[in-house]
Length: 211
Image (cartoon, rainbow, N blue to C red):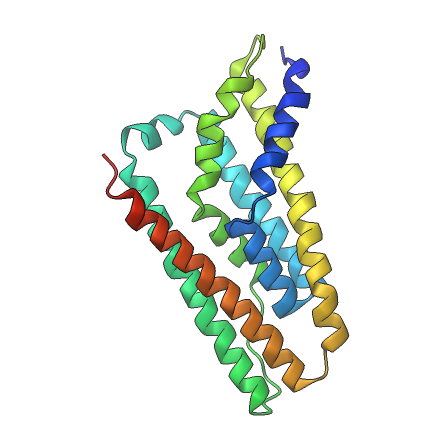
């Protein structure tokens, strides 16, 4: 029913897609710096949830909607950029509170943030639309084959990007207790969000309106 012979090539392609920094990797780096290791673990579970939603949607046939209405993906990109800018604002506010010596820093909602960042990353669904059909092989059940491939992709991203978040969280853990250090880490996370939102916006402008 499922053709496992395609897995080596498929895993190699996933690694090529995951290696370059993207919204999910940048988000995990920022979360680790801002909230620490536990926050990174919650965030990566949120990203995995969002990816699972896209994988299930493509298996269910919603990929045809994305193909026939590419402007929907542009709308998702714009929402993603706006959300990242909002995260940058919240993070900068935390940095300023730290500098002013306020003990109450607004944090939390890491899981939900991860879900939203993942859902507003259209490259995920583009990956499923472009890559998964190339690895159906001789599977007798294409839907089951795509579901298995989607699950493998989710697990690989959760593990790899989760490690990125946890490793960056070591810096936050070591510097906890210092308001100046907290402010610096929050400003660093804010910069990541802004750069990422800018990159997404520039990509949309360069690509032009979808036909």
